[in-house]
Length: 395
Image 1 (cartoon, rainbow, N blue to C red):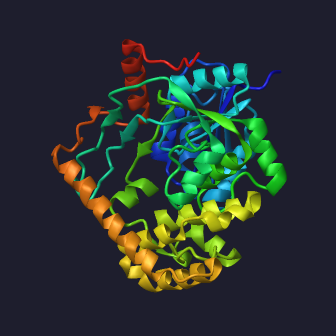
Image 2: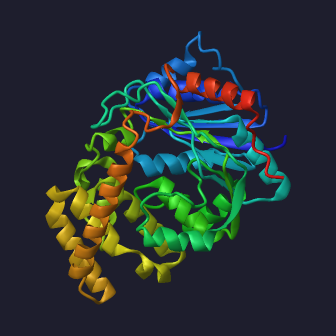
């Protein structure tokens, strides 16, 4: 029996309302080479009940591999467990409120034919679940599928150069990096990473850890200008909490970071959880395994300036991390951080000024409205892209 072409890996925890639609949307693609891996650490058993129900139309689909995990876990452990089960030639990791597009399958097929290690993506089609809220427009995005106005083919990128740029921006996002999360990756490479370090992902953010590990291990990779996945933003997600500025707290107050606090947090990264600190922690923890000589190239100044501006309630933690980073780098950072804060304020003001020139909720982006879940959004995008002739074909 041959291995599947593409394993779509979906870790989940107590989010059955999102996950059931995600699974339905992926299995709607009539591709026999698909494999859907779902590892469920939920304590409410709701998703398991939905999948076992008689009226579940895809419960007997042989492409679905669902595993219920009942032991204590965290986000990174669940992601590692899910990756362990993948058997496809290529792997795509997504969240339980996301989906892939039909072009993910075509990208995997093209990558397999041409022995391409990673196909990442530069643009996204994004879906806002009905419960998604932001501080600025509240529920204005709810139910909308945002679609890029222009799509192209893509480009080849150099992973080492991209790692350097990611270090300069203090690992704040995986843009223009070889992605495992919302990317297509040769499983053989992921297996090599696990063999070398004992795990697929290190630290508190699997998406950042995966990107840094791949950037250390691949040379050239392809970046698509055709969406390969549909990231979902929902009220119950980290993205949703960040949009409301509630995704922050002490390390001990969050299961994801408390485990790493006990194991030893990375020096120079403020000891509280937020998007900024979690990304930096995971990136640096991974880099220490693959390329420790690169750690001092990390832009501690930018990270500390960002944390100080965005999270003033954690000033003590930022000051402590500043002292750690200064000792590590062998120089005082006070002036550099103050200068960087001023730069960040000006960047923020410029962004807001540009946003005000298009005073609509969408900000000028194209969208399809009224989509109740990711399955409806996936079907809508398929019709839209097919009608306009958009498809992944870099040859």
